[in-house]
Length: 407
Image 1 (tube, rainbow, N blue to C red):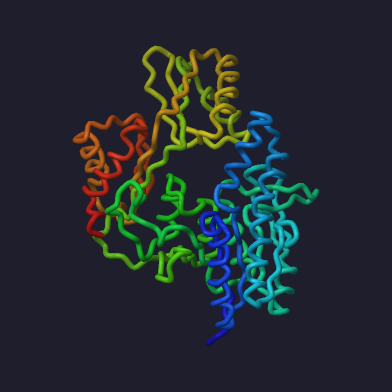
Image 2 (image 1 turned 90 degrees about the vertical axis):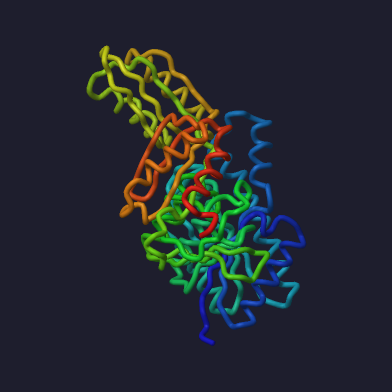
């Protein structure tokens, strides 16, 4: 068998306790016995990151982002060392590295840094010596040696970026589910595993709320054509392949449905209906690192209008503060926030060539008495903002309507 280079990423649930760490070590060892070179990327143990965030908030409810990166990066450092020890016990050579040690250089955007380049010389040297290399996911370092993190789910990005840099044969993402499903199986037990999915579909699903993979990691995979295999760390069966093109039947209109409860809506009332006013609001938000998603501006009849937009719930306090300051300057009215919302979205490349998909979605929502507050579309997705309490009902109704129960 030809010697292959595999990059394998294990999420927090895969290394949540001693027994699971030992199981991961055994899986890695089984690939090493076949003669493959292995680079492993590991997340923090279980809920460690959430626990560290909670600890920080007990100290300071508005902590410095630089210090948060310093704190959160420790979780992965624990994981890589323990996994290396577990592999040593099985009789194999392994070495653990932090993101900084392997030369993952990022920009200075703390808590959501972007990778600029990867040195990877230490990894290549260790592989030449026959070692299994274990890299801390989710983290990097600036040119000034400040530790940074890559945002939630950033270990996926570490793995994909390393797979590209090392020209790996495959990037395997191990998680606690058996692959990508038509929707969240915890909400809809009839959800089916998808065998193949395109980068475009997976990117839409990830950015619209599917939590299996980080959206930015899919962007990198698509850009550099890195094949990704999403599979379970608790099973040996094949999972879902994410590639440039997927062999699907032409009549598969919708591939998946997502639900995202981590968004909040901001409405600026009585905005002067003049050119450039909206730009001032969104430029200020962008300049402070806040991504705005859906935007709706009402038609003006009285020289004033309302503008509503959504942001990540984690950014709501910062976004409200900025928006209120801009609203005062431009002479707008009240600024209202609503965290009791959810986004439900349908995704599928087949939607491009099938008319009537939006009508079917809206009819299904109406039949189930679900009110739609905002709508956004792309070539391969339709998103609706609804009340959070209706989220799971919407998922089940749409999953059945588009035939995904039988996929």
